[in-house]
Amino acid sequence: MKKLILNPNISVGPFVFGTEQEEVWKIIKREFGSERDPDTERSLPAYEAEYYPIPDILLEFKDKKLLSVSFNDDICQRYCEIYLGKEKIWPRSKKKFFSIFGEESFVDVYGRYFHPQLSIGADRDDDLPSLIIGQEGYSTEMIETYRIFDIVESMTKMMDRKKCRMLINRTPQVSEDGRTDFYPYGIIKPEVTALTFDANDKLIRAVQTFTDGDVLNISLKQNNKK
Image (cartoon, rainbow, N blue to C red; front, top):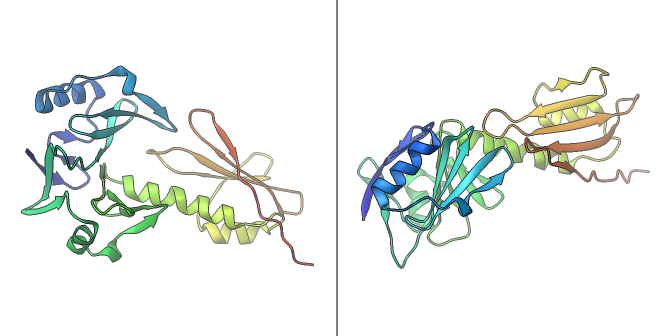
């Protein structure tokens, strides 16, 4: 079993974030004897992902450079352990994992906990959680992505523009006609949430646009005030 050392925001074992995709394939073959299977590659909004059954990891790439590594706990055949200094952090039970860092240091994002400073995330529901480790800023952008989405989902149709901006608490980019506020998420997941207002600055539409061209119309709640 391989012992991988975590250098937060920079690397885990032989995986150095920012490494070119072709070099990562060589690392996988050298370290684990696993050949790249092109059928495992799949496109996701803003990045690509590849899964390797040996050593049971999912790799995310942005612009053909390594963005994150997700480790799944195969209890039948474990291929590696992860250490932070002398402390083994994975595989661990969820309770033990959080006790190492302090559960209050993590932010709950739709069933996965993210540590903003260390760029690590763990699943909430498993006794032996899978572990995702990313480059600097990975966790903070995941948190921001879902934070904005949650806020917009809570908005009501015809909500005042000033209140929308206050809730999101970020300075938007404004369209040329002045009717739409754009909230981009950054370099890791450069998706955009757009809020469109009528001539009276009342919210009429919310749309999330992904870099692959997909568009999600967010259903705004109706304001039931009489």
